[in-house]
Structures are given as structure tokens and as C-alpha cells.
Length: 130
Image 1 (cartoon, rainbow, N blue to C red):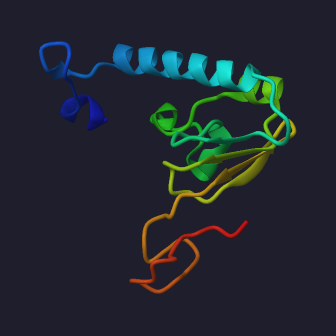
Image 2 (image 1 turned 120 degrees about the vertical axis):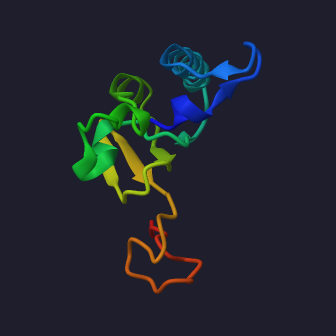
Image 3 (image 1 turned 180 degrees about the vertical axis):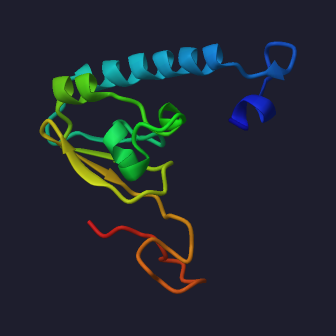
């Protein structure tokens, strides 16, 4: 992936980022999110992330060699905390699925001229209606 060639870690002598760095960040962010989801809350919980929370969000790209770069498998977290809705981006692939009791929806704008057939230059190109 280009990320490992182009991204630098500022606090470590400005070296290239490594897979171990992204794994550590993922674990740290997951711990934070899991702690937030465990807090009592009145009403529906909506989670918004950049990264997709489930491999099925990748559609026909599911299972490819770079799948983990675009979608994590947070099935256990989703099923344990049961948010009403999980919105994500990053993949530019339209998806709307259910994991456990949670609706998981990609809200990426997409790549114009758009996933939905909107004409080039239309600022709404690729928007999903929900």
C-alpha cells in the first residue's frame, strides 16, 4: 500500500509508518470506542467512523488482499453493544447491511460522476439516500 511508503511517524525520527503502528492505533481506537459504547445512554446510539466496521461493507471487494485496509471486522463489538445505526465512509462502495441488530450504512460521497449515475459535476453525485 502507498500508505506505508508515504506516511511518516513524526515522533519517531520521522520514519515511515509500519503495519505495527497501524495495528497499535486500531487497538487504541477500538478500546476508546468500546469504552464509549459501554457508557449508559438514553435513546438510540449512532456510531460514525471513517473506516468500515465489517468486511461485508466492501461488497464485491470483500476478501481481497487489501480488505483490512478498508474494513475491520467489528462484528463482536457491534453485536455486544447493539448501536441502532453505524455510519461509515472510506470505501466509496455503496453498502447498506445489517450486522446483528445494527444497520451499517456507507455514507461515502463516492467518485463522481457518481455511483448513482448523477451527471459529472453534480455535487450530489454518489450520495446515498436514507
